[in-house]
Length: 496
Ligand SMILES: O=P(O)(O)OC[C@H]1O[C@H](O)[C@H](O)[C@@H](O)[C@@H]1O
Image (cartoon, rainbow, N blue to C red; front, side, top):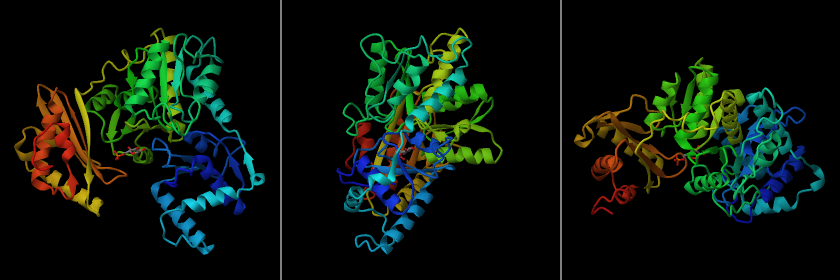
């Protein structure tokens, strides 16, 4: 749920407004200050706290003026349907209270109303609770237990340099309150150190997002400069993360899933691993090579985690659910997508392997068998009509038929056997090389998204060129703007 397009509606203002609304209804409110999204969930089940509900206010990786609420109860995070229901209830109640600018059924909240409510908070009615130390202690226990160091149980990270780039989100505590007390050197011995640990909603250094090139490059620079054994990069509210290996290799997206799959399969041999739909072919081979099963589902971390829950309910053991965006959840951790939990698992495996005499490396030896595509591209194509959802579905249906009818004469194009969103087509590139393309509707925006990967140089644009013939023949440019395909692959056309 997003709220507050007015730049004055910052996270703290929203928190104050929410607290005002809740206390006026007699709800006992505890305000946390800076926290992480996973910590909010943990506050509903942590001994001595056990709140009935928790609300995180964050714009996540979106710009500062797109703050939103994430809701949790003991049963986990709210799904889309839960949020709509909550909004409808809130709007109905608000209207009944004679609020002239909101009508029952409205799907928005009014910024002025938020500001006014914030000003009327009675601070006496709110408890200010510092929950992050509780959460940090919980993570420290997980790491200690996971490593189970025979000689140094309390400070098992002594002798390791681990740096954190929190991108000025709320993840800085990981360096100071989790890793350092366990003995890790989080400052780095040379030029650099952990960085951007202090929360600053303007994000002055880089976008805190492990999918972002600048964010990963900053993490790589810090690891190289400080000669750290490991770097950890987290997103704003720390439900996502990525790591940087000691040799400076960024481990995000498919690589991060592969590393977490290795960990999950070491603990739970044969387990199924659910991912989103845009994972590389090499990841499936990697997981099956380790004896696991790969269930390639849909984009959207809620979809991925939800599918894992469903499979377990059906009796299919599924211990890891992870998206290429860096959202990763394990069944053993309440199915909670927690960037610090995933990063802790990497720290644990690094130290455990070191204790087994295998060195500190987590990339060269562990991911040697992960085949990566030569090229990987994403094109986001605007849907221009009013009914973009219907238009998008119609284009996807046409794409399906176009492939079934021989993909405009292309050789070796075949629909994948399992498709859970849009249509993914496998492309035989000869000599055992295999590319693919997936056309799907964006989860949130009026866009069609085309992901393409190829095992050969120039292969990606070869695939795109073929798909352009579909757009030329079967789609109308007043409905979809495919110009990104032409630009991205320097294809000449008179159409745009
Ligand atoms: O469908 P798209 O526009 O590519 O966006 C999909 C992505 O949206 C957000 O970032 C969610 O946090 C991700 O879980 C999701 O995968």
